[in-house]
Length: 271
Image 1: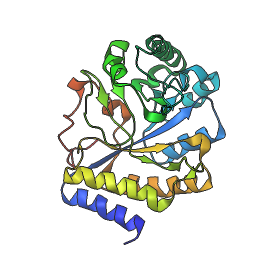
Image 2: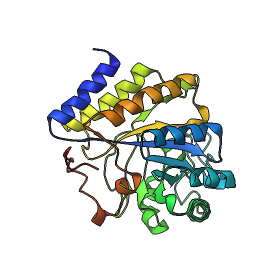
Image 3: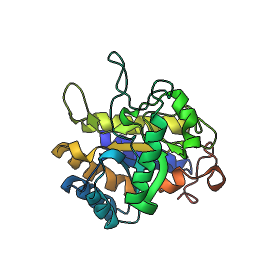
């Protein structure tokens, strides 16, 4: 079975079970209007797909607001840390969002980032945090609701739908880029293996079935192969009858406004 056929068959299995394979799309590291960002937004609009753009607050420019203002209604903004700066020690993995005890000013920076993005992006901003390098200290996670965040998004299957009271976690699971030893497109076979693997794990109960499968892109560093893969993948997903892309607003909605995470949606009732 080819890689694309394996994806088709997995989606078919969801449909045969009367369920919707929910997916979402997050793109990281936005700061300004660029040809690559416009290309990404245009691709989402051409397929009527929701898109969540993670913006670095300290580096965000006014041109980004202009790009978003002209984009489709389905584009939303998430907060990508504050400065995308490494605050970890020399022997630790890169992490901006370290423990508040180690960096007390982190709470103020996150609040400042919220204010900057609210002024720049207005109603497109969702109060959800995307940690740079997908890393965040556990003590800071517990403090996020008190800082005004209702959502958190990192990488790989989540352990808890709500790691803190009032905080909804929805991760990504398919990063289409390879970062080491060379930054380039991950490859069609490897990317589809991640995608099919998470969908299958959800369907069989190996991971949380209620967590939408997240596709992670990085528009600023895509090579030609990465763009080609997206332009092949997204129409297939958008066109399959068992595939659904709920809007980010619904994924990170307040508890009273959403379906319980443990309840898979039916195809007929999916967003």
